[in-house]
Image 1 (cartoon, rainbow, N blue to C red):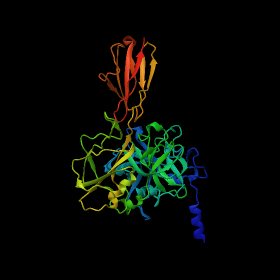
Image 2 (tube, one colour):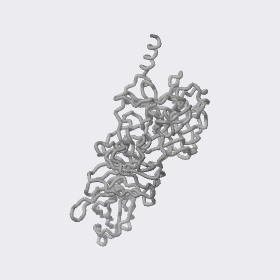
Image 3 (cartoon, helix red, strand yellow):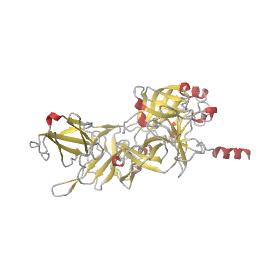
Length: 493
């Protein structure tokens, strides 16, 4: 009876300390050791030369229930904190940087700094996870009473309460870990520029900001890691959905926008990657296991957004995938779908073909919306799909926009004190990706004439008073490179 009662008390603990979900992020001190269980979460500096490379990381328990710690210390963080390669895994790569443990409010002079040794494994292909080995072995950290966080063995249940403990930016005057609380809202497939993420955990914790990437997503009752904070729509606009820092969900083949939302990469299953305290990517059921590598052809350029066009007869013309690559396997198979998760199903893949110098150039469509190209590597025509193969396909996304005009240029035109003009274009991918301009004497320039336009990618343009009057012609181009109708502005003395 005493044992059962004690277990119930342990299960009933609220690591959120009674705070409501969605409440403002709470700065954590460690007075009287009350937050000792988060000493293993720290500020991660991967590249010491760049403040932008700051993330959060957590020391994980890699002992598989064993009392002795004979292996290295491993930090779990986001894959994008160490790599931006959307196609291949990174393995066993030396890295410089450090992590600061004991990163509590008011404790900056007594943090525990430990140097990074190598990126053991990292990916942003389907997941967003990285394991980094420290120079310091795990036992030495245990001797310092830094207790690693345990990995959950199962995904979150519906509406379960979650926590994020991390180091968001914006608190330079009071640095330290912060606790955010929210409920689990389900799993979603995401597209963010060239990145295609599958089954990410959706939630709305307050106070998440740059620097939160890599923060452990924790079960509020057990304090076990169930995911790693990856991306957010909190500082993005709906018009930029599916682009950089503006992840979109995929619903029925269509991109959907969820404002003020965060997404975390699942970490359940990672405990299967450790054998006797050491990372072993060949371990059965290891979720960071992949040997498939893709090399892109010289003519490759990302094509994440394309528009259906019309020929002279008004018939639709569809873009193609135009995907040149080679694999490190002898053969490959592929298919196209409207769901990224469907890439993990072995059904409807085409017959195997030679995987050297391939060009997949099938048309995309015919329906507007999001389309996915799924590629797996095989050794022969007869090879049966294995779990490893189907869990780690290469997935490429393309949004197919319906036929129609490109958004007109949007310019802010200000008169300068010396009499000239400052013209600043508004950029907003995918619709206002790049501008082209031309200008000259009003009677000598025809904005409808296509010749003479030059591209402009960023920043403002200045026109001196001595050149006035002046006709300014501009066009906006979307990510599919389709131009808008020309805009005409007269800049008068």
